[in-house]
Length: 295
Image 1 (cartoon, one colour):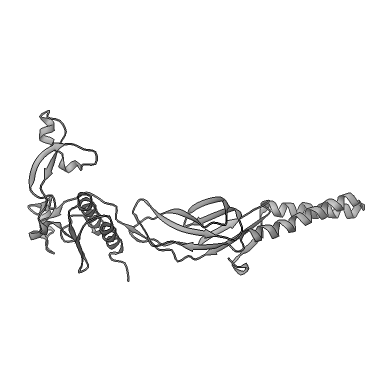
Image 2: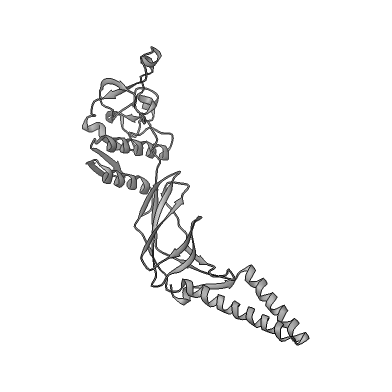
């Protein structure tokens, strides 16, 4: 950071220190006491040296923003920032959109930090400028800078378990099908067997009848779904509003990717896939996060 990007002002403690030094100087001048004047001059010198050291602590610090970050609604988005400086600097406070981080020391080696920022709703997360501040060494002055690192973060819908309409019922008039025959657990395939319950299994697959019979906690297992059942779209998702339907699509995308089932996600006339795996799931989550956002 250059000198023009740095701002410095005395803290409340620094103002009190300066007023005290001035009062001691007036007292020493009034009584012509050299020792009191020497104390006032020493306090004034300390004040000036502290101002120079505080400003020098941030001068030359370089910050670099990380790549695009993706999180979920209700969670945090990890934003990475890299700090470099030719000489060590101390006692840095970083603030970004309500997230604060204190660094006791930044040495000459590049240091990568992660700031976890929370967001209230799906879509692009509006970020403020990064505030870098220091009061080193004595806390008499506060030096800061507001840096625009061009950080970009998006919030994808949090996965929410729900049912999908059968592909034959996925039309624009499918709202009536939710009340009757249209709600089917598409994507599960045909029923295959009952298996023991494992942590993480959805409640909708638990065999409650067998549990009531005293046969233990069993889960319904299904065969691999047909290709047309793995085509995810808003028309097939069941939900009260757009956000709930997107959350259902996020759940099925994560479920297919976890089980290694290739699937296709169709949004706004654009189809992703068929594919599977963590990288493809990230693409789908980003597409769900960007849905409806201006280009």
